[in-house]
Image 1 (tube, one colour):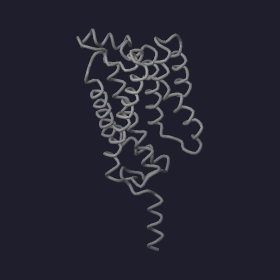
Image 2 (cartoon, rainbow, N blue to C red):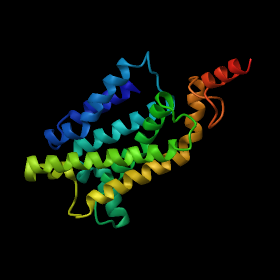
Image 3 (spheres, rainbow, N blue to C red):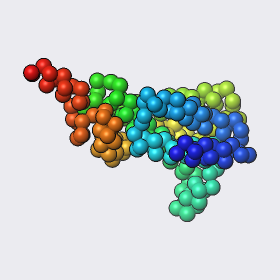
Image 4 (cartoon, rainbow, N blue to C red):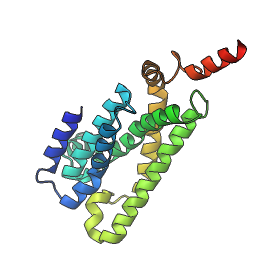
Length: 215
């Protein structure tokens, strides 16, 4: 998957529509991929999370190469279904919630007291929505600094409510991810020895502590 992402990024970097926009859209991959590789021995991730992160990286690579408003596949969808805009930007923001939800869930499960808590799901969604809002502030700063040159990065396509739609898409993506993938994710976390063998199980360490106390 690392090789797939590297090849995808290399193709994306070949004569992009706008070099600055390409960098702003793909910088997350340049930061995230080395961190994952360097910390893998100490913090290996589930296969589900790895696949989702790779897919998200490729979505970012395509959006960075063409800009989100001009991705050819999005133009085809717009023309085929009679939409008013290229929908690839909406896909990007759905992924911005769908994929980070599993990342946040894995981090919270493995590093916080929320393991097995009923608060895990809502706080995961809240964290994804907060990140989406932070990204919109990042886009706003780019627009203020870059002026019209930041239009390709914003990809508003004339929609005055684009910011709100972007955050709403991230919210929907995160919610759907938690609802659909939690059980699968828990099973993979169990294989890593992070949680018990069933969803919501008490951590193995806690079980041992409790048993020792009883004895």
